[in-house]
Amino acid sequence: MMFTRRRRALGPLLIMAATSVLGCDCEGASSTATSSTATNVTETFSPSDETAVPEEPPTPPEDGAEIPEEVIAIDTHVDTPQRMLDGDDIASRVEGGHLDLPRMREGGLSGAFFSIFVNPNKYEGEVAWQRALALTAAVRKLTEDHPDVATLCTTADEVKAAARAGRAAILMGVEGAQAFGTDDPELTLSRLRELYALGNRYLTITWSTDNPLGHSSTGDHPNRGLTPLGRRVVREMNRLGMIVDVSHVSDQTFSDIMDITERPVFASHSSARALADHPRNMTDAMIRRVAANGGAVCVNYYSQFIDTSYRRRRRQVERQHRDEFAALDDAHENWVDRGAAKFRLANELSPSLAPPNLETLTAHFRHVVSLGGMNAACLGSDFDGVPELPLGLSDVSELGNLRTALEAADLRWAPIAGGNVLRVLDAQTTRAQRPETETGSPSDAPETTMR
Ligand SMILES: [Zn+2]
Image (cartoon, rainbow, N blue to C red; front, side, top):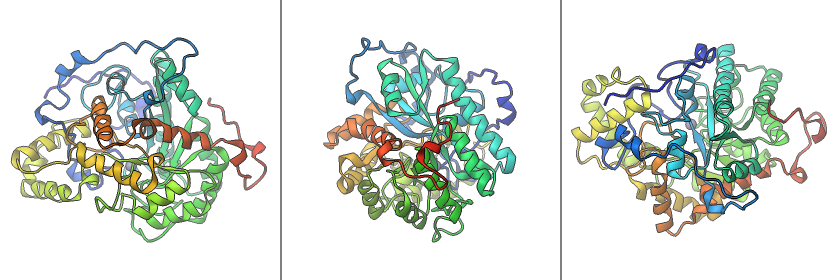
């Protein structure tokens, strides 16, 4: 496939940009970035799809009209900011990748938390912090440049208002405390507040590696938990009204967080470990505990997280054809697109590979609901952060297929798509629940309006 990627100058932001930055969940993918899938893999990201995508925003309902609750669908984790910082203007349809605003409209996704993820394998110290700011600025710039189609949102009411106006609700969350670029406690807390003030409304305590706040499920010490600084940060997040995200953390870090949090948490992109035994997934006990806390588990769509037997088959094909896969490493600038090419190759080399499909993914939603009820599940795609997606869900434009599959399994779309996430977001700022700060009363909270 030959794509001409639409680019526009981002000025100083490009100073911090890096090409082909790995997203958040391509664990082991530094050498084996796999792919995005489609029902017909030869049609993945076909340029001819462009003609089918409406470029105009939907007609908004009359002023004051209520938005039917099933209209609101919020994805809690997309890694698209990495591509935005590389120059993709997602207000228009962009070739490759998983998400842009036209494809969000086509798939019925009204909003998403854009992930502010800084890869600790590439950036550290002050450079990491500057990249976190640059990613945040790139997301804000999208809404500033395209106010007719996208609105920066920090509350449930703002999300509903954006949906009512027919605009995409753009939210932000920080993935991993390595983004702070420091282990100094006071500087960490200060930078947490700064990212909050810029509009970020969650922090995933860890990414795939351990950090000064706690230990990761895939880090060097997965049996260890939250650090003393991590405890301070969780309490400060409770005070600010910032969602504590328990995806990626070790089981012990999860337990430590749940012992101290005074507000509902969510897992922004995690599937069920009982169905796919991977440390990134949530155990049944963890899912029950999040549900009991009033939180939600937003299911990750990544093929290799939702089907571990497929993961083994897929990796075996790559081991057997190392050179052919390596040849694709230089063929695509964007690693998500490189993954799509590798996925096609894997299926050509092994026609019996049997990748997971929407039925596989639906089973994870059904499992979460069976343990925690209909209020416990939500959408945590990891679009643009993983190299493979289930058959039938090649990008966000095909989200309607997931809705069809969930409803066929007697799962209700409205709470899973948006209601549960808006409830968790709302619960962060309910004054009655607002805890005392470690240094003063809630009224001492720093400036919380965006700037
Ligand atoms: Zn992640």
